[in-house]
Length: 382
Ligand SMILES: Cc1cc2nc3c(=O)[nH]c(=O)nc-3n(C[C@H](O)[C@H](O)[C@H](O)COP(=O)(O)OP(=O)(O)OC[C@H]3O[C@@H](n4cnc5c(N)ncnc54)[C@H](O)[C@@H]3O)c2cc1C
Image 1: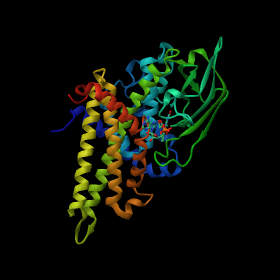
Image 2: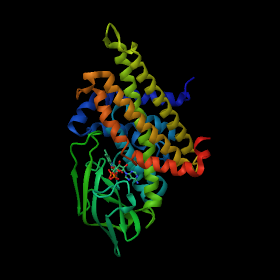
Image 3: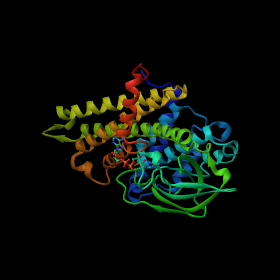
Image 4: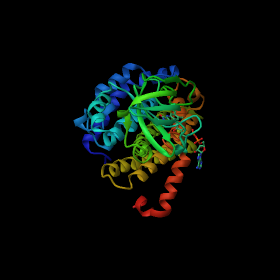
């Protein structure tokens, strides 16, 4: 029996066909050149994929979380760098704006984001601050008619392309978030080269030096930059990353099955060797479990259940581990061929490692999960 109803299956076919035609043929080149094309951004926008979950009244497609899971899974299966754009632009910024933006931001900015006329990124991490996000050092000062920001944001996905970057900054103990434009005075963006994986996702180092922005660029309530904006953004982003990781795991398994049926050693296809069969079995279980956790998280998210974040965390933790395991085994099954820098499994292997670092490392997910389980185990496993 199919896991999904017909409408979702149709959507998967549509996205897969789009990916096979518009993304897969270019993914290796984009990876090598460390940039996706402008053309693919416009094509994603035209399909409505940059605003899939944004409500219709703000120019989006108003689709539920399961549609979004399928989109991210298929993009992850094709090219993790393209999926990264949807994560930061769609999940971290647009979805968060739909929830917490002012009426003005929602009516003027959100439709342009949903249509891809503006591209957005999320600036939380800094040279000295990653997992311990509450310790951000970027500062803001409030003046009569402007805010002034100073500091640096590092590893910011698509900072090199974004028109708007959400910046998380501190004033004493208060954390607030702001919408900074790349054209604002005092903003400098430098590209970061040589990343292990998702190499085409335009990472940047952002320097803010006496950057003055108007008061209406405050994003969320003053002093609520963490509780309101960042917690929501990370939860949204984690769901996108979980489902994108599922896509990497699935692609690794599919490549492995094809190769195991085709490559012969000792007179038989390598898939006939028990040690290869074990790898395929383990990968299959990991992929299926990741899919179930991701789709369950989608359902819980749409119910707006208070335990949403823990189900999303479960999905992200398992799916990113599954991606690492499956991509590692895929390289092993392909032998020397899998080590070639033009082979897809080699890219999947590098991209998979990133999934255990972004939107909270695996260790941070373990802390969140164990803290929750120690108090409310039944909420997780029932
Ligand atoms: C490809 C890529 C894209 C990214 N995109 C963005 C983006 O768009 N926006 C953004 O703001 N950031 C982005 N980041 C940064 C990312 O969010 C951080 O790398 C991540 O939060 C981890 O922080 P860190 O790298 O500073 O590691 P650290 O926090 O320094 O951690 C180092 C190691 O210590 C472990 N560790 C830390 N604390 C604990 C603890 N309490 N217990 C056990 N172990 C611990 C970590 O798990 C990790 O293994 C990106 C990173 C990458 C690689």
